[in-house]
Length: 80
Ligand SMILES: [Zn+2]
View 1 (cartoon, rainbow, N blue to C red):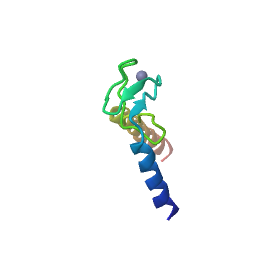
View 2: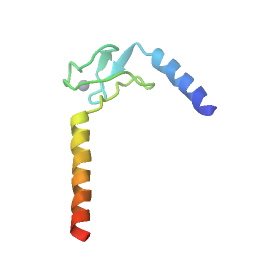
View 3: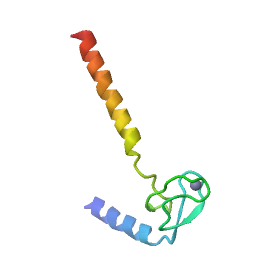
């Protein structure tokens, strides 16, 4: 129950913003900006604090997951 109320409050807070801040350099950007004009970083949607989200960087996530899998395979190979 509390979660739903919190979500509503978050949505309201998000809708109240007319600009968003770059998460890297805190430059004010328009809500539809996809890239910070100051530091050239990609920015996502605004969050409830008025700061743009960092877009998910899939390529670095995949590299991270792959290195974990390799690590597990290595451990398995080394000990069994
Ligand atoms: Zn920036």
